[in-house]
Length: 206
Image (cartoon, rainbow, N blue to C red):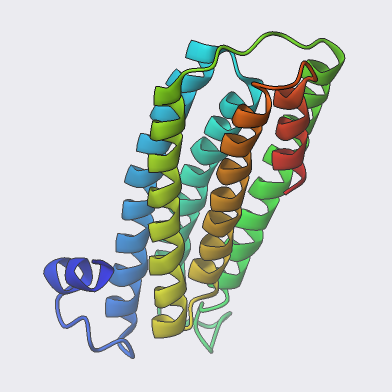
């Protein structure tokens, strides 16, 4: 599907040696990331508050900050496409690496905050209301993130883009984290332990 979208919205998309084309493709991937993460954030935030799950709410805000990662992708693509100047005679291509560092910093910061909130839920556990529709919608978000991993991995190979590589692995970690979250919801049905808080900690560490 990403190939279709590139062909549809990027003129002369096969000319990837052209910096302008490269910028447009990376910007397109960033816009797709913003839309997907916004949808996932709304779904998870609604579900988290509906069943009173700190783990799902934490996962939702993780996806909210993924939107910032997509914005970084777009901005760094435009900066990297600037022509050489006196201070940068070889161009500005290294902005992509700076953008990748920014994505990593965001992931680390969000993880730290989620760890604190989840630890508090372990110390002071609260009941979580199970709902089969939650499992279905969470599974839907996993499929979206899996597609995001696949298209960003493809663009990393296609464009040799470090920012898409970072975003791909971030999406993959979200797939694993949400899958574990779904598993924890099932385990919570048979144990009184504060599984919700423990799973929030695992998501934060990942």
